[in-house]
Image (tube, rainbow, N blue to C red; front, top):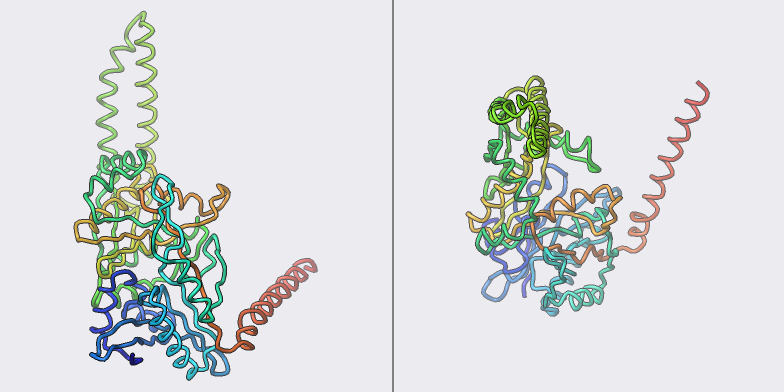
Length: 436
C-alpha cells in the first residue's frame, strides 16, 4: 500500500461518504477547512491507496502547533478504515506515526466511531458483532494508550449518544417515542408552531438562542463568527441546516380566547343553577379550573409578545448532513413559552426531514454515562432518550505517544502549572478584597 497526502477533495469526500461504517462529518474535508479557519488547526488529508490508486482508508489529521515547534495531532472520530483488518490498521498507523514525527508530534489522539455498548429504547442491551474488544486490543498492541471509560463530557467528542435508525417507516420510528413526547409534539402543532429551514441571515438568531441556553445550562457555546464560518464552509459542498421553530403569540392568544369563550358558554348556565347536582358541581369546578389555566396561558403569551414581538423564534437546531447520516450538532432554545413545546415540534420536524431525505442514521450527538439524577446533564439525557433512539457508548479516546518526555510535560506539568497559577491568582484577589 502507498501512503498518500494532500488527497484531492472530491476523491477524499467520495471515499469517506461511501464508507460502509466509518463515514462521519468530523472526517469530512469541510471539517478540516472549518477547523483551520475557526480554530487555527492545520488539516492533513492522508490515506492509503492500492496498486490501482484506489483509496482503502483515510484520515483527517488536525495539527495543533505548540511552543518550541512541537505539535500534537487529533483524528476526530477517525480513522476511516476497517478497524477489524488488523494488517491494514497496523500499516496505516505506522505510516501516520512516521509522517507526524516530521512535524515534531508529541502524540496522536483518536476517538474512533466504534460502539462499545448499545441499548435499545427499552433499555435492553443490543449485542453487536462489531469486534470492539478485538479492535480495542489491536489499538493497545499498536501502542495506543486508552484514556479511560469517562462518563460525562470530559473528552473531545461525547462518549455517549442516542442514535435513531431512520431506515424504516416513519410510523415505526414514532412508535419508539415516549407517550409524553408525542403529546408534546401534538401540543406544539396545535399551537401553530412553525418550523422552517433557516438561511445565513438566521445564524445571528440561532447564536442568540445558544447564548440563552448557555446562560441556564452547564456548557459554553461559541461566538457568532464561529457559527457563521461553519455555515459558510460546510454548506459549500454539504448541508448544514438550521431548523427554526417559532410561535405567533397573537395567534396562540386568539386560540386560547376562543377556547375560553367555548368553555364559558358551558359554564355560565351551570353557574345560574340554584341547586346544582354533585355532578354539575364537579363539572363547574373542572371548567372553572380550565378557564383559570387559560387565563394564565393568555397572560404568559401576552407578556412574551409585549417583550419580544408577535412572532418569536423559540428553538433553533443545527443538523449536519454527510452522506446518508445526520447529526444534531447544536440546539438553542429560548427561556420563554416552554409550555408551547416548540422544542419538541422542532425536533420532530428535523427527524421527519431526515427520514424524507433518505438519511439512514440520525445521531443526537451527545449525552452522559453518569445517570445520577443529580447530574446537571440528566435532564438533557432524558429529553433525548424520549425520541426512542439506541443509547450508544463509544470506545473512547486513545493517545499514541511519540515523545514520552514532552507528553508528560504537556499532559501533566502544564495543567498542574496552570492550576497553580489560577489558585495563586484567586488567593491574591481574595487577599486584596480582604484588605479593602
